Image (cartoon, rainbow, N blue to C red; front, side, top):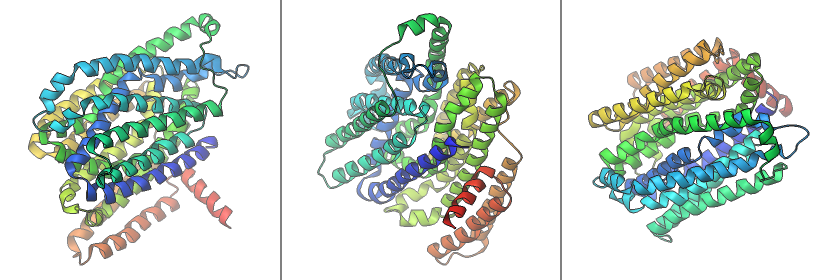
Length: 499
């Protein structure tokens, strides 16, 4: 995969450094020093800011990747002023949606006030938090199109999490008050945004001035850009809201305490989808360029590589998580409080595996000629998530929210694949994905039977033995069966260097 493989590998390393920091934060700081209510507050503030960012960016992060190939010319190292618009368009979006957010205080207070009054108290802090998160995201996308994902990835995955860890500790030992802790959240993202801005300015010949002659000479491109942007704004109203619905519904219907427990379960499940962030971040510009050139052969081959690798790696991480779930809750400080979310972790883990595997197909649809379908599918995703959360949470609590997440994404994925494979004539799958799924299912069944029919004398011993046997067996079979040629090639290269 060339530069994709190199940048993805480095980006994944940076990501997993962040995962290690997040692991320490989640399992040894949050659950020990903070109450579930305090964890829930931090979670819902960040989720609210993320929602506002998704709307305020006006589709600019996707537009950056889709349209950068049209501005990138060898004779112009300033990219025809492309990066000027990456500053202005998100700013306009933020000012508009910040005003809408300000006006929504009363209905938000009515919805959350009874079960989660603490969130209402810190409602307006979402605005500065969202502003800094917005430009951190925008400049990370700028770095992606310049084929440099490692530093922005390290900033987001490791730097931000390290800052959060320090803030949690300062709050835990009462160096910071609750007000100070919320302010610290904003400062962390402000620093992350600043670092990304400086980095992007240093790696490329960036000029934040518009190239008006180029725009006047390419009016169809300008119209296409703004049509795409308007479409993505409408799509974001649905698609950005959907991933946050579970957190908001649990907060409103069950309270911040349950939001904190649900957040811990989500932190665990999200580990399954972490590799896709590096894979798609560097593959997306390549995919956008291939679709722009109507090179469906390269686009399809790239999609199969990413899908195949993501499913295999995600399945391995999911098995590591689930085989050791009882041990994790035993190690977790106050683990008995969070162990009620065990089945929630399983369902959310499957949802994350599905999300990460299909994401490259979503990317292809977004950058292709049929991107209009994403608005319809996003609406289906959001409406189904709202209906299912509203119906299932009163019946099954957090597990109901997890099921609504999995069902909604399953429907969404089927619709996306229907267009990508049926209309765009791109196949993100090859024969090995079915083998990977069968292998995953087989290991899960064996793990279930092992726990059910073999008595667990000691959780530590049981987890270690099952990990060695089941995870080791999974890896050996995957390697011997060549379930991913790319991963096998990386392993061969690594061992050759060692010898």
